Length: 217
Ligand code: 3PG
Image (tube, rainbow, N blue to C red; front, side, top):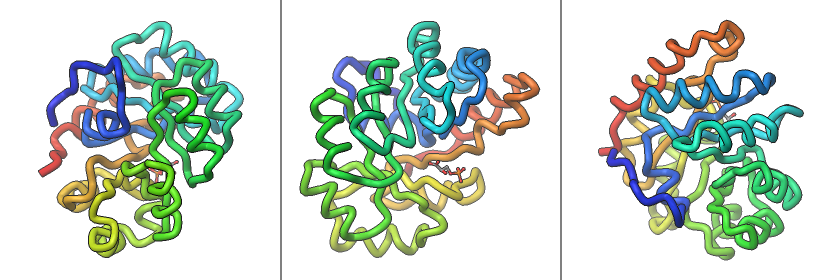
């Protein structure tokens, strides 16, 4: 996949097309944030979704935004307008949400942040589309129907693109990426908790590198 060079007016589509995989990151220690971002970047992955699941998440985003400017830090697990505002203050440049609500959509528009809203049903896709979002996260993808679901959605929602996330692995990613309505996948397998705890950044770089062999066909 070709790297996009001009990221000054970042769009959801650019977030999805930069690499075949967006890593879903859970950070418990601010000291891990910068080495992790550098390790992923060294492996060719620069769109980094830091989830708002730990008390340290915002400080981690700030550290990455400040110290690793070549990376593009985004906020995941955004569930409210307040989450989106806090993420923007911390330097997030895109937002990913596990579900969709109008207030989250509105907040991201007001903040000028691209949003990948999470959907798992036709109704949710229609709600997100109604608010102008056509690049969506399918979550939890493998638990909610995986490839078969994406193929079924391609008919009525042919103008929507997805980033399936949840249960995606290096093994099942190729069949997802082969679908015309899938632009990238998301997953936590690039950032194993034990590798982070051990400071095994080389392993994380290798895991990132492995994902680049996955190609959007
Ligand atoms: C997410 O948080 O978006 C998903 O839970 C990531 O799912 P995974 O851990 O199965 O990759």
